[in-house]
Amino acid sequence: MDNLLDDIFEKREEEQRQEAKKYVELVHQARKEIDLADHLFNVTYNAIKDLKMLAAIEDHIIKSSFCALNSLLEYLRQKHKIEAFSTNKSVMVDLFERKVIGKYNSFELNDIHFLNRLIDLEHYMKNSTLRFKRGTSYVLALPDYSIKSLNSDIVKNHLSVSNDFVSRVEKELNNNED
Image (cartoon, rainbow, N blue to C red; front, top):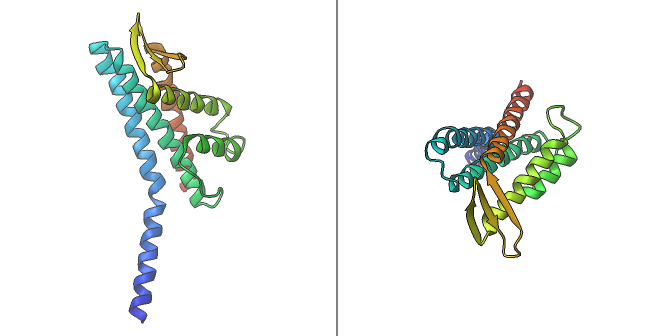
């Protein structure tokens, strides 16, 4: 009987250790994604100048930003500062707005606007039925004929803002681990 209880307690402790490292893995994944997007934009895109590549770069930017957000929220959940949450991007942004903005100086309302723009862009990227090049832009069109265009300046801005966001999440996590 004692062995059975010991096994149960050991298994539970191991699960808690693995859960505690989840936010660390997420922030490392966010850093990898943003570094990959940076390399694709500054090296590969500049070499080949294929506008279709902008959508692939934006995909990495979106993944990076939301891995960082998920990491921060997961850290706060583990510290019992927020409740369990859905990994739906809109839900995470709403939770971030309600529970993080204003309580942590590292984050501001501009982060909410940026994350919502990424959600909107991802919607266009997933649901566009028509994609084409127009001058120096890559255009995504939905079935209702609403359009969104990508160009190197937009992607460069998103890359910069996302890199800054990931860095601030890393800094916040490192400051609070001590």
